[in-house]
Length: 298
Length: 340
Image (cartoon, rainbow over all chains, first blue to last red; front, side, top):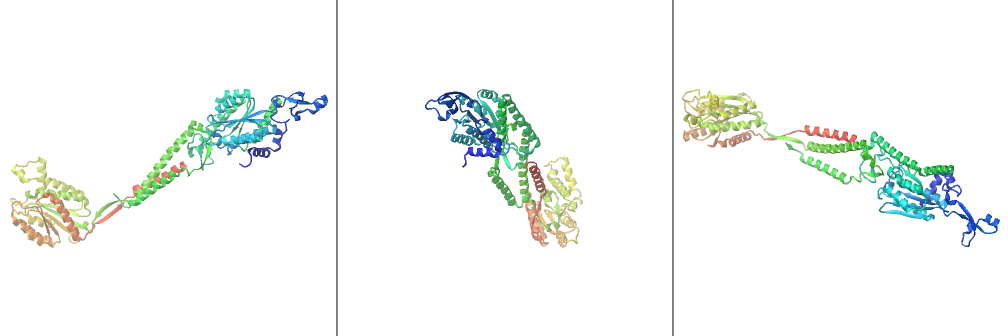
């Protein structure tokens, strides 16, 4: 892991999206995250100690007095990443890549956008017994630390998935209103998290990124056993190759996905379901574009 | 039932256990890196999946069972299950005539001789046997035959019928049921053709000698002759003449003498002299229970004389184990193919 994670994500963003990405991520004026933080409030007289760079030279020229631009108190925006670092995320994604890599890339993309805007990014993750939390900071080092923390706290030996606890925790520790990116997997958040999500979405601007799970039957790869990270048990080849079982499994998963999609839609939460690390950047940029478009219309 | 190559069977079983042990200890390392997935606990709620899992488990148990069965059958097969029996091929060319004196003094010995031969019939392969009884006249109960069903039946019935203390019954000291008396009467019918005479031993022996047929074939012929030699009448032959006809016809004489009844030493002396003069052998015992061992002795003497080396004949019985192995193999293949 010689290169920094952030650099790698940047390279991925450039590589995968080219100019299309540059449009949304570059320039203060056109950022997707453009919001209340940039709101110009007032001009005030320069006081010793104010930042020289904040002096509005045109206004100073007009009035003869040094004037500085004053912004709303929330000058920089706060972003938070709520990462599901349970063992379930250390498994195979639908496209055959690691769900953890997909999660790090997704978090990396958020960090990358934040880095461009100078936004602060915090992290909530871990489990009830080992909570992980990083305060909101904007430095490159912090962002790198954040990505590393996400990467390293997600192992097959982590605690089992408990998204309800995670959302509760995120609500409790993130007092300030943030743009909250929740990264979890296909099976979460479940219908039981509905009220928690609604509570979160009243305070935060919530985005949910779900990473698809690999097919538990893996009928095309009978050389390898399939092991569920949370409940290891043998799945017989008979069950894995059966078309009927495959059909029933697919139906169940589709129903589960649709239930979650429906719930998030009803809460007006931006969300996406991506196949894994290979598609997460494209999917996120598409989602952010759509979101920008929606915001612009609103 | 013996296992000829039992050590091969053991070796195969040990090999089977070793293979099983090796695969058992290495069962984890045989699996290549497993694919880790998550959120698959819902599978248990899918009926078709649960059914498939259960079927797979059953198939696996069946597979193991069939494999074990196949191993056992293969071990059994390679162990060469066989039956062994001792056979003396030359011995089969034997003709034996049981020549029994059924005068009242002899009944216990006759019973033992008949019982012993009845129990030996199972071991006979090709021997022919005849039974002739005599008192004042001779009666052939059955001629030389290798119909062992008949032989065994006749010998058993004869042993039962002759087990009859005639003197005791006549004197009233022994009592028998009516059908027993009739059986005895039927059995000894024809042996009292001459009134007031009994135990015409030389004539009885001579008529026993007449029972041998196929004089031109080279067969071993022997007479087991049981008598107390207490002649009570006028024989046509003298004992010596009778024994000579026997010897002339190349018949071995095995005489059994149970001991004196009324006669003095001279009866025994005559019997011994005549028997030995004509190349026979005399056995003497007053204990009826010694009969089986005497008959065995006769058998051995005869076997030695004929140079008949007893050979061990093994007959393999591979069919059962073979079919079982085949079925098990087919089963393993079918189940294994079904449950890859």
